[in-house]
Every structure is written in C-alpha cells, then in structure tokens.
Image (cartoon, rainbow, N blue to C red):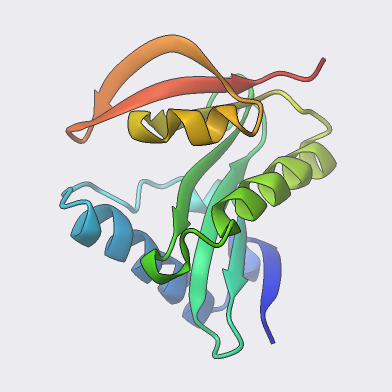
Length: 150
C-alpha cells in the first residue's frame, strides 16, 4: 500500500536507505547531470520523510533538520520526486507534510531551504520567500528561501 514514512537515520532499514540514495542519485546526478557528493555526512542527523508506492518503490523524499543542524532555522533539504510522479501534486504534498513534520518535531515553523532557483515559484506557492541570496551549488543556481511563522 502507498504510504508516507518518517524515520531517523538509525531507524532506516538498509533497503530503505539504499532506495532513498538511489532516488536522490537518479534525479540529482543522472537527470540533472550534476556530479556532487550526495553523502555529505548529514543523513545521520536528519529525519527522513519518504513516500513509497504499492510496489515498494520510493518516489518522493525530503531530509528534515532541527534548528542549528544545518542552518540557524530548521531546514528541509534533498527535496525530490521521481520523474514519473511529477505533475500529480506529490511535490506539494511532500513539502506540506515536511513543513508539518518540522513543526511537530522541532516546535518551529521557521524553515530555511536552499531551493533550485527554477523552483522558486513552486516554493513561493507554499509560503516560502526568497532572502535575495542566490548562489551556485554544484553548478546549479540556488536561492535561499525562508518560511516564517506569523
């Protein structure tokens, strides 16, 4: 059955972590033709939110960080949806659930992301606002964005 799962690193099975890394590499390295070091030492301190199909395929994923673990604010990173599952609002649901989980886990709604610039409008539709700080990460334009609770 299709399901959402949230786990700390140490609670992931070897198969779950393999499937997560495979999804990240399929999108960020192969599809986006970007060579970068995916295993950056931060998986061990993150929570991992992922969506699996009835067939057990991991097709959507984010990493969630407590304030101070990545940025001063809580953070969401490695946001990814498998190509065949885009345009089904799964990315919107993934980010909505990620924001809700950050609020529940870390008792904050102040969240920073390093968004690929071409997705700025998508993140703005979720309430994130650009800080105006744009930068290149692994050759891809990114923008720091914040979601601040009112």
